[in-house]
Amino acid sequence: IFIDTGFNEVEIIINNVTPQLKVNSKIEKEHMLFLDQMGISNIEEQVSMEKLQAYVSQHPKSYVALFVLIDQMFNYRFAPEMKSISNKFDTTIKITKAFSYFKEQYLERRKFIDMNVVNDKGKTVRLNFHPNKYTLLDFWWVGCNPCFVDMQKINQKINGLRQKLNIISINTDTRERLKESKDRFAKQNLSWKSFWDFDGIMSQKNIFFYKYPTNLLIDQDGYIIATDIDIERLEDFIQ
Image 1 (cartoon, rainbow, N blue to C red):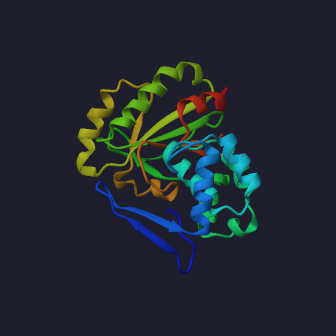
Image 2: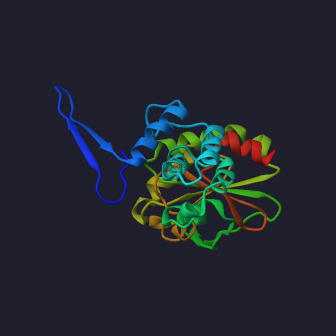
Image 3: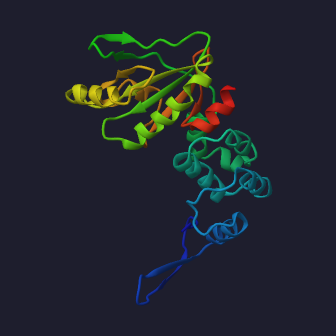
């Protein structure tokens, strides 16, 4: 439900199942229009980037579209089209805090901040990237089963990407779970190494953790060029 600033007319419908809330606001009416044009019943469903781009072109002052663009990033990962979509918003949208944060964190080319990590021998080392390859930083924690699913997906594709891609996993568990996380990682039989950033303290200089699994794609010059890129898009991008 979307509400405008100021006063809104609210209707509460009580039935035998669950109370329903209806808001008579301009932005809520646009919300309903958006659902209809996207062909979805819930604002959090995955939407076509092509349809979203067309909608923003027609409604450049849409706060609903901005919400959806950010929500799609959080729930369904980064899509390259998001940058071109964001450019179509009106200035009234671009000056909002939500847009500014989204642009800074996910759309602008940012230099990766150097960080120290702990290797599997317990020694603190500086994280180094291969100068002639892209680097995928894969963040995980020991209880994240989807993290291991993603790792295996990448591992199945690694032979076709190895010449252009370097992969580094980074665990963000506490120091007390070092042995447990090392054992769990070893059982994956992966072709790359993991390092440890206890409590994710150093990693958070480069990324805000709102979910796992999560990753960063870094170019040969050390710039972050994608966040939460899935294996299919990674293949297309690298090749």
